[in-house]
Amino acid sequence: MGKKIIKQAKPHRILLQAIVNALNTIFFDNKYADKVIEKTLKENPKFGSRDRRFIAETTYDIVRNYRLLSHLADTKDNFWAILGVYFIVRHLPMPDERDFKNLNEKTILDKYKAIDDQKILQSYPDWLWDICENELGKEVWEKEAKSLNEQAEVVLRVNTLKTKKAILKQHLAEQEVEVEFLDGYDDALILSKRQNLFSNPLFKLGLFELQDAGSQAISEFLGVEPGMRVIDACAGGGGKTLHIAALMQNKGRIISMDITQWKLDELKKRARRATASNIEPRLIEGSKTIKRLENTADRLLLDVPCSGTGVIKRNPDAKWKLNADFIERTKDIQKKILGEYSTMTKKGGQLVYSTCSVLPSENRKQVDEFLANNNDFELIKDKTILPSEGFDGFYMALIKRKN
Image (cartoon, rainbow, N blue to C red; front, side, top):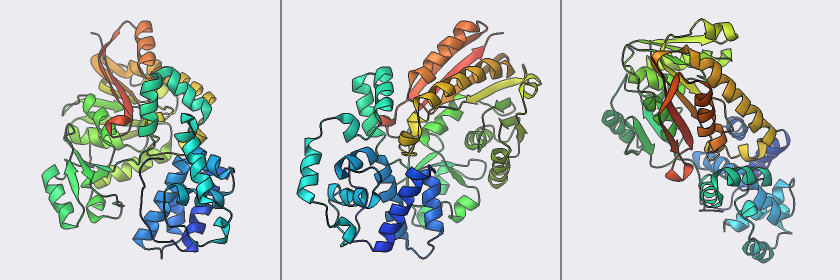
């Protein structure tokens, strides 16, 4: 089960109840873990910072190791029993709760030691393990599977429109927030100790965003320059758009597109905070939206929908919410986007196709198939960032449209 996440004296029952309620909501109401935890903490504003951290990290850790813990507890839906087993396996002080009285520590630890099935030990559903092992190979996948069960690092992206990396590091230190520089990433700082920075005044001033190192690498891979015309065609909430705006020093134009209006509305708010003034949000209302922009982009970013297998560290409940049919449908969407949206790249321009997946069938194989069917494009380079390198898993391919 990896390293112990957090040390805590015997917790009060109200904290345990909050965890059990959260787990029931995640698994039975099929809600996203991050939203459930956020709501749980919001509904209990009197919890101290240590208690809030304990609830969040324990919930995430149980979600991450759900198959193993439910196997040891011999139940999939009794989260009191699963929570008790968690305390035993993590060697944490066992709370004096009636719900844990029937748990035998020696029996559970003996059962744990006897497991030799990696799918159970690493807590993955059979179908997902098999797909990843088939595509990556046994040795590579086992390494990545283990890495994806580690807690995600917190990485900041310095907003260079407003400050410099060394200056922000100093400002954060004055607030007792320790960060370190990150080799190979121009605008990144890594948090030494996990904490919630969304209420930090420096964040509210727009001096930084929370953005994983791998995600930052994609914007840099695009090779934008001030004055260019750039399209971010699958912008979502706009994390990469904002990074691109900073890389362009607010010079030139970025058309930031998505099929969902509320995401573009969120981007507008974030852009104001960041003082990113060269962004034009645009809703994709059908093929006409794309057609109007044919042959116009110096750079095009296609950060396509994907399985999200590269970001399981950050979204551990994805292991239990994903299914094989969804991945197949997503691959069809990727192929469609790459085929249709690539026409927005002007001749001599370049596009980046990217995913947060570890599966080659969503990554290089999609690119190879596209190139085989579109001889006016050529691959310049591609890059894979695996979760075992310390951050989220990403794939990116830089493709040029020939003159």
